[in-house]
Length: 393
Image (cartoon, rainbow, N blue to C red):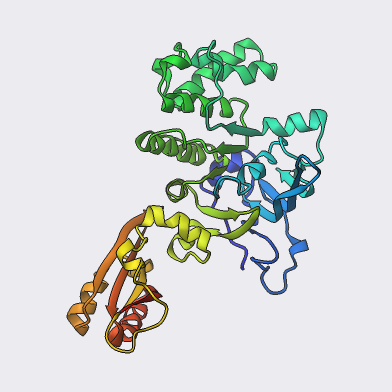
């Protein structure tokens, strides 16, 4: 698969930080995502990459001596200033992968680099220096109940030895950035979940990191609060040029914030690429399973029970998925199919989304078997994607 770029969203901010646009994004394991022709997996470059995983594996030893492989053969370059989502079910290995970025986990095989420094071998002062460049946002906030909003944000600065005279204005600036100026003197018990997570974000930014890690940061929040937190993260990415690497089990979070996404299953990358491309043309069953919850592409149960993979000899209908993307994403193509060609279309399920600023629709429809091939040809001629799911007698 061609190496793809993760877009840098604020070149000016990144230039001010001494960072440069990197080579982009490549990830995968050698069995499921082979390199493009003429390029060896061992040639993966980390030049310009803010975060780089190179053939990373992680094995744990269970009681009794049995070995479990949590991660296998993962290589990933994330360019500075990008937002990348890693999505997977519980136990897939995504948290283990994320914790390697700040050295909380060490790989069994391979290397992990942050800003060109090898976290996997760093120790002592060198490891502490790398960690200062990596901010972490936690799922359950991890705030000190005995400290106010300002006190919690000041904590990492105190630990880093910053003079008190410098801490106060720095904290005030961070509180203002996350929209908590009115709550600066309150304690965590007096705040909502969204406000607590804003403290966590401000605390993660306190030491001026180059990389921000988000460990299921919105999974404990309600949908409305989740949107406000995601908007804040997008603003931070745009304004500060920070690289954000987030893990989640919610495809809606990836849709709303990430430019690129990797799907991890059983310790291996099963699909990866630009978020828009993954949403419009998912290839792996795991990806489709995640997408079904946010794109309305699940067949109704009464249709699924009758679906077969063999076309009926007479009559019946073909069930297809139609993906609306690109220039014709908002065109009334199904209406034209009926009006211009006289082919009836039965809509079974679907939704229209917006990924970034680009429209995307996904519909499941049924067509008379006798006219289905003609209908698919018409839709594909107009830039739409079709996939045959089966037949209903």
